[in-house]
Image 1 (cartoon, rainbow, N blue to C red):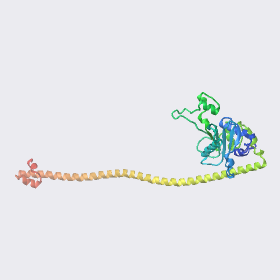
Image 2: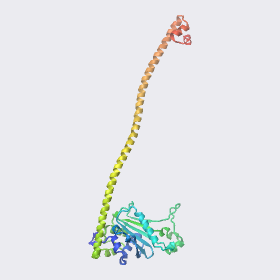
Image 3: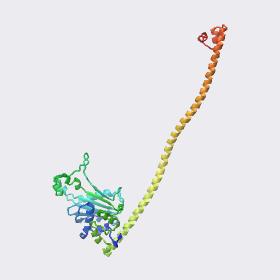
Length: 357
């Protein structure tokens, strides 16, 4: 975290100890303006969830809840370790803020706009970017380019702007919470925008001398480790050691879990592959056997047919030869004056065949 001779305090620690001081509001205001794209002037900080966490969890996550001068709420949370249900906790945090800061019996229009800003140092979800923005939009099912806008009266009542031009009116989405996810570890480029300068600081702890993003100049002044009192500096170093230690434990657990999962998956894959290979082999063997059987059967059938044809031909030839000889004998007996009955008994020819001779 040391660059150009400076050593800056991590943002999560600063949120917990330094940035709640009104003199340092400009740091968070600058960060939010770079992210949200509009000024967020802090009126006060409200009670946050992490203020009630036990000591064991404090190294892992820090959050603050700020209210703007316009009455909007912003939850800023920093989390170091992986959490499978983090998206659900984002939703819970926003819902909790909405319900806690509207009085019983107050009209629904008093529901506050909430921004949920989540700075995470782990792989949350799956995607290619390092900054994500989520909002609730109402888009026509039959007209996909039609976004539901507020009426003139709603626009005036909720935002103080009686805009008749529907294209310039606020959308229904502007009433609902908005979410930002900053996957800090995925940032791997040169900072060219104010938001990138902030993310570079969040990832590396460095503030470039060329950085111009709102709030970073103030951060240079109030987030120097050397400016901390001795007891605060010692507490900060203990905190950083806890962060490093727990990160090492998490990384070790992840690597061990990966190896166990890899080994188990490989074993199951081999079993499945063996099973599928046997099935495929049987199928291919049957097909090949069937094919070869047909060929062999065809070959043997031809041989058998030839053999039987020859035998049958011989039999027929013998039979035809004997019949021919019977006709010759019958003819000679007829010339000798023997009766048809005598000739038939001797040669086996019919009386009709004998009479034709």
